[in-house]
Amino acid sequence: MKHQLDFEKPIIELQRKLDELRQHPEKHDLGINLEQEVRLMEQKLEETRRQIYLNLTSWQRVMLARHPKRPYTLDYLRTVFTDFSELHGDRLYADDRAMVGGLARLADRPVMVIGTQKGRDTKENILRNFGSAHPEGYRKALRLMRMADKFGLPIITLIDTAGAYPGIGAEERHIAEAIAVNLREMTLLEVPIIALVIGEGGSGGALGIGVADRVLILENAYYSVISPEGCAAILWKDRAAAPKAAEALKITSKSLLELGLVDEVVPEPLGGAHNDPAATAVTVQQHLLKHLAQLDGLSTSERLRQRYAKFRHYGHFHETPAALAGTTLQAQPAG
Image 1 (cartoon, rainbow, N blue to C red):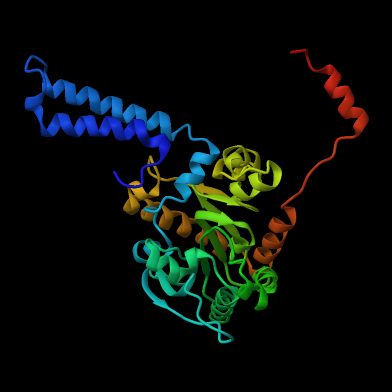
Image 2: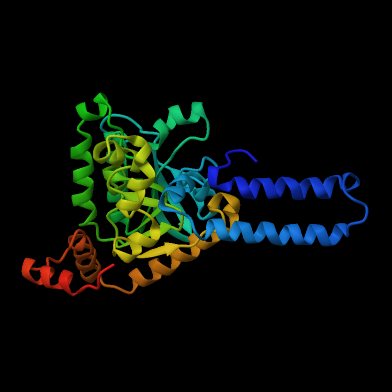
């Protein structure tokens, strides 16, 4: 099995033994009940899979979100949508291949789909700039969103990026300004907007196409202001502390839902979306249609009000007076 993750090694080993038992039964003791032995090993394999994948740490989910076999934006455009017609260029500078978008149909409904796209090999990663868009990528996205708004088409964005490209060229062409304009303009678009984090949701690069009426996230995706490695390098002065940083950042789908930063977690097959892309595509389509139907039931003014309130609420916190905090601490039992 290629691209195995460290925590998957017990599963890989059991699968290897099971395959060997099936393919070469003559190597084993003739006195055993081969059929029963295979059945017992299958049960053990399934139980091991469940124990591992249902108890993943935050860092392990980050590793799954980055899995090279995980479905990317163009994969979902082939499986969730139909009649995709890609549109190119920002009409200002260039066509950024890290940001793809165009017209498509979602269950026969015309929509505008925009998303960040990674590559599967070195050649494609260079073409797609490893999924990190330049300013022209965000300007292209905004051009397509304005087109959708003009023609009354719902907008669906698929987020999978470690972050916007931080190079000199991007800074010269004002990457921060491009993202900031998108944040402002997306709050004002009158059509329904749904954002779905399908893998990595890194910093402003993700948020640049993430201001939406509904923010959804796949079960093993993550959404964060900074990567665990970047956080570890700043706080612990050591990128090896990334697992500790991932836990502290609360970047997994479960934590984000509890904090009110996403509206729903889209479940994945056991082991991740790459284990059954077809089933994942069906689930994604069902969730997109469900939320789109809910948004259709709102007036434009109410939808805009709710969208604005959603993002104003981000970062909301409560303070406990010092005196009360001290009393609370004293009331806690020792040990």
